[in-house]
Image (cartoon, rainbow, N blue to C red):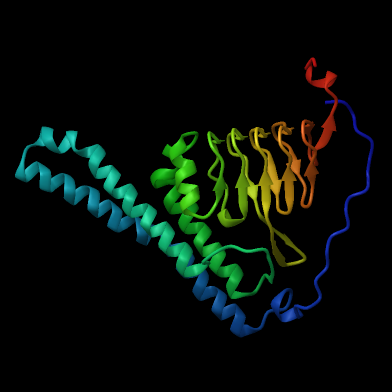
Length: 260
């Protein structure tokens, strides 16, 4: 990519309504509260895996004993489907219990909201992703699962990333492509304040491998962002343009070797 001259970064928003005890100088009570919640957050994925594992093992052993080993082996896909169904139910239950519906908000670091969404994120990414989400990458089944979580996914969208947490705030249009391990990050921490906002990716857009798209940003229809790039908070990528870099910058058509 050609050398780009320096440019001014947008000024960050500052929120002064949160006291120091909720940002930089938490009280002992907040420390104790967070320690309890962090312990639960660490234990939850393993606790959720145990009953799923028991379901698989006990089901396999029951089929072996009541029918035969070949029947048990041939039934393994059905057993896994049952485990995945249970896993989806667990993820949905924790989202409803801990978060409900994601909405744009601003919350201090030391707050129940932040701890709840971090706990749900652990359940989703450390339990749900290895159990079944990884197997769904790049398939229409992942779009269906994300719709269950509240995301707005268009027709024929290709999604090859599991790094989306605030699903209710994410809109992906028809025929869009979110490539490998591209985080759609609808939150950001600034000055120990968590900011949550919408991300909109229009029809026929593409997001390259490992590219990060931050909150309050929008990719207009037919726009494209290359790999290992960063779409900054509040950025709007105009329709029909090509962008690349960290932070992303517009590229000329000639730089991409494209003819019109």
